[in-house]
Image (cartoon, rainbow over the protein chains, first blue to last red):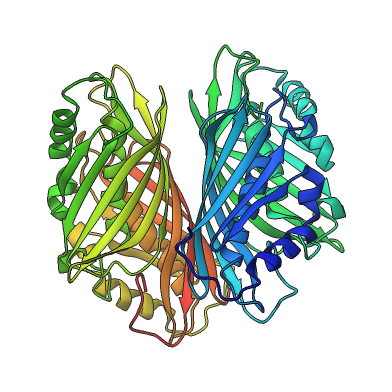
Length: 153
Length: 153
Length: 153
Length: 153
């Protein structure tokens, strides 16, 4: 399904292990929904604790799961010794994030030895309908040989 | 100190009231540190619950307080009936967000009837030293006459 | 083919007329390759006059045709009286823009009454092969009733 | 005046030599106005050939000189053997670029071994008054040991 070939067979386990160490994900209630080479989906059920003042998901919460979805999409293609760091991202909010749950779907557009560029879409589901509510374009960096020093991986 | 003139005298109270309704701010432990016309600072003490797997603040958490700091900087210059919505933002992560606390300082660069452009700097403080760890450029929208329908204000 | 419905039948002519008034397009040697509702492609043959110091297309030249491709994709869905303005864009350069020609393909992701969000891909063609060399995410504004005052439309 | 220390004494000559090889700069009519460590200004007089359909500078033209101003600000701090490449940038257009000339002022915010982050402001001057018309946040990459292969340096 994915157009990318992972570096090692254990890419999914590496992604899930690193995700489990990101305590903010448990704080928000986010979980990994899918891991494929260069593609990672993260789900987040709604809770009032994640809302802005009108009761929708706060834009920063969307950004947080989108950043991790893109970051792990990149990380899934790295060698086992490498770690991943977000250089920067840009996100457009297309409609209010109103729904029972969010899904952030991160995909690698262009893998590279040092920099990997990802595209992330965030969908809100409400009463069985999904709508695109945000879109992110993101630059990730691969850091070789420092497995312990990384932000998103 | 600020170069901007607020629309009404009660701008600070409007900002603080709206901030109090953003439940995600309490969830993270963020608080408003300063409100001036077109300038808002938000502080966030470190907690393990906000970390990525290496123990630093997650980039999405920085984005969340930066988005609100810039959003409220814009909102402070709006008329009392208006609400504020984030159109988009872009954030660069300049160094690991390693420290006891973060401060996001949002400033209006260009106010406008519909769109307001803001610049937000995020500082990490560690052992008494502050360092710039992220920089955001952000586009906010003013929505007149719908005081209830807004994302960040 | 396109998922969007134009406001009027003359959308293609409106786009071509406005493009013809953008003198920078003739200066660069760019021409419209395709106009569909919410989708516009612009072609640009290589010339040394457009190069950076290593002989490839300058990144700013890519940005210029990408900005117009996305801008006209948005404009194609506007009402005949409206004009279009670029609020902002973000562009990633994925590989050197090395080739005989570029094609910028702009597509509307989310149309809106005021703001329209577009995605633009820039391809370089060399010896019969096309490669994605840049990707832009862009925010356009619709201005009603001021047909003369617009930046990209 | 600048807070940065250049790697070598000849930084200004390196910047000017590389700029002279960017043929697009001569095509547009742009020239370097100032070079300091980590700071480069580029001027561009108005010409109809650079306009969008309403007669103002096209946004892509602003982006082009802003990209080079930030790129050379970064390059001024590199070692003599290194070259510079634009990873990505984001630009907000704050007001119509209406005037007799533009000045793009690029400044390094955060230098780094691999990545350097810059901020670029673009001013339009009209009848003796300057106004900020665009703001860019930009990520540059340093490539060691390939003096010939670079986009902006």
